Amino acid sequence: MKFLQKYALPILVVITLFFMGWIFGHRNGRQLTEGQIHMLVGSQVNDKLVKVVSYIGNDYIEPISKDSLAELAIPAILEKLDPHSAYIPAREFKQVEEPLQGEFDGIGVVFNMATDTVIILNVIPSGPSQKAGIIAGDRIIKVNDTLIAGQKMAQTEVMKRLRGPRGTKVDLTLERKGISAPVVVTVTRDAIPLNSVEATMMMTDKVGFIRLSQFARTSFREVKSAVDTLRKQGMQGLILDLRGNSGGFLDQAILIANEFLERGKLIVYTEDRHKQRIRQYSDGKGSATDIEIAVLIDEGSASSSEILAGALQDNDRGTIIGRRSFGKGLVQSQIPFQDGSALRLTVAKYFTPTGRSIQKPYTAGDEKGYHMDIVNRYNHNEFFSADSIHFADSLKFTTPKGKVVYGGGGIMPDIFIPLDTANMSKYYFEVSGRNILYRYTIEYADSHRKQLSGAKSLKDLEAMFAADKGMFDRFVSYAAKNGVKPNYRQIAQSRTIMESQLRAYIARNSEFDSSAFYYFICPIDNTLLTAIKTLEKND
Image (cartoon, rainbow, N blue to C red):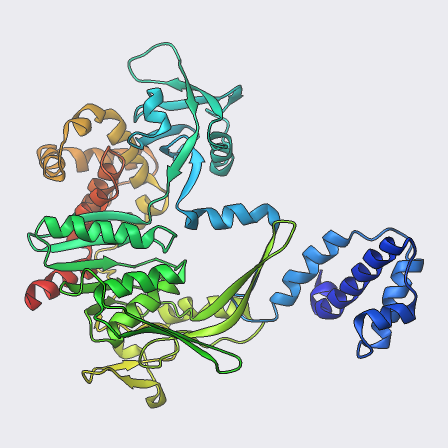
């Protein structure tokens, strides 16, 4: 493999020439001679490579597997380029593309495998499983004739068995609380929407919140619908949470930015190797140009997230809050192949309206060093202090209203929020890192299913948690039974974090959507709290 990587480019040329010789030879019922190959590929090809092709075609002891050689050589070549050019084999293409397409075919449940049991946490309303009678709390024992329970099957394997083409049927054998005999249901698979807007809610009487997890084909439509919903509830200021959003379709970022910008504002431009630029401007048809906006970013926000944040920041539109974003500003063009695979090749760079390059520096071929950048930021204290982040004067840019912004990779927020580790103790890391805290929330939701189902609003859920005075003490006992002895000094230090997380996870494992998670995590989310205060102050 090391030999192949070292000589990937000449090997690929040899393979290409061999393919061409093989294809044309088969067309004519015979192999090509050296001279014919020369004529076919041009006289500039190195004679040595031509000879190698001839030797392989005529004398090699075994038949050559063309596909396997190409599958090895192509990724090896791309490794020598930038960190974002990539080859997607046919067997992986659907899995890579699916999250961005807006839907998949399946049964419509959210499940968890914290243990080796598949527990249904949530059933998508009006989806195939709800129509078939599956309810939250059910355990899947069998999928068709395959035993699932107790088999320690990988989650990807379970998903593969549950998903399938729409219209096909799958038989599920379930264990249901209160029912002694197994329950067998037949579910007809159908299209299941993949929503990129995870949460939509009012944080205060005037401040709305939208959590966007990725830029999929439906993201603009989802965000626009969410804005309309919140406006009807009295929203005057909006928090758009892009933390951890690694990007997706560029056109969706441009459409969302357009919603908040007046006519004629530059949103983003790209520049290719020939210095040709393509510019995207707002058309003035946006429906949210009057809404104050705060955008939340962190080191996990990349690509389309950075384009959207940069467009708003450079046009003095809204406030960017959080930590410096990832720094992915390379444009990939996707080239499909007939076998279902594809090449994503970097063809240009993104620039914000003021001319800042979003892409952080990289060394061609050093992918490991590129991804170590985040670790280096942490080690250099950049997650904890804005003063630890240094920009050269040559990277300084100015917005139309005179605000100073910086290039050199990623988007630097207007308001920096350090990573808060003050209340994190060894006890917290133990119960969190060993998944004990989350497993407890699953068991809690399972044993309180009736009460959770009776809650009609987040306020009802909040009242239920407040009334359960023993929830936290039972969690500590549960952790002790699972190998983490109580340290009451450390528990007191981290109690606020753990209580918020317990409530947030239980709420998400109930019949509410992900909005419930952010509602209950808000008290310990300094970035979100700062955004609320900023918008209220502006109002």
